[in-house]
Image 1: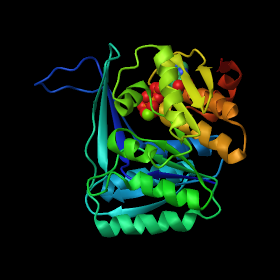
Image 2: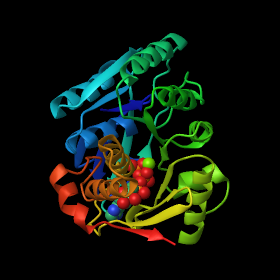
Image 3: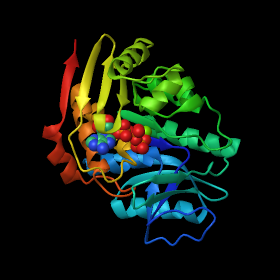
Length: 309
Ligand SMILES: Nc1ncnc2c1ncn2[C@@H]1O[C@H](COP(=O)(O)OP(=O)(O)OP(=O)(O)O)[C@@H](O)[C@H]1O
Ligand SMILES: [Mg+2]
């Protein structure tokens, strides 16, 4: 079983239009609503890959109900703590030139009592679980060291943790030694406080972070694939070439691929392969929709994972 925790879910609204004009009424051609939030996406992809998963987090109001309905339709299990207000709607506008503009809200505020309810719920379900995925931003009212606390509790119970966050929750989470982190280059740059302009510096960054006590550090680079470091060992992951339509959710799909490998007891290289195939499948799927299981299967043999000397 893979548990995912998304403290700050969102409904992703994607609008397609010719071009955006500021200060004018823009008429959109097509609008899509998808359940989102990084852990929720990871659960959806893990489910597609045939692995049992339960998504946890906070939901609020009518927009929260959209997420529940979508997960039910996909057959993904969930346990959400209902909080007052509305789950945020993250809007993405894609124009005909392929320019992508997004607006992300802060999320519904949670109280100390809401946090305590979520905490005891996750703690209860952690028993007997293989992997916990902690993903995305934290809503107003949740302390930035939340992920660090979940990592410590998971380790007490022998549960492996994959952390996919950024900023302060990532920095504090890293200090609690999650088993896997999967920042993209920008998130890794922010974490280390320096630029990573080329492959050599990205590999160096992954090694450095892994030596801080993280079993696997995967730094993803979009179409360029990823690098992974585990102690002294490192790999270069080359993603299959696909016609990229929208890479939203590729990282979450990669996290799901790694989580499934960990849950199956496969080795890290298998996780990287499955992760890159899932990420590429999602990149090849339009809007914020995730890749289909058949696409992941078809892409799997095209991923290459090479050890770096
Ligand atoms: N255009 C692409 N073509 C092929 N593979 C891709 C492409 N974009 C992403 N991938 C695959 O998905 C993985 C994760 O993508 P990316 O680095 O964009 O994650 P991310 O920035 O965390 O994304 P997000 O957080 O929006 O889900 C990559 O390492 C790669 O294997
Ligand atoms: Mg990401």
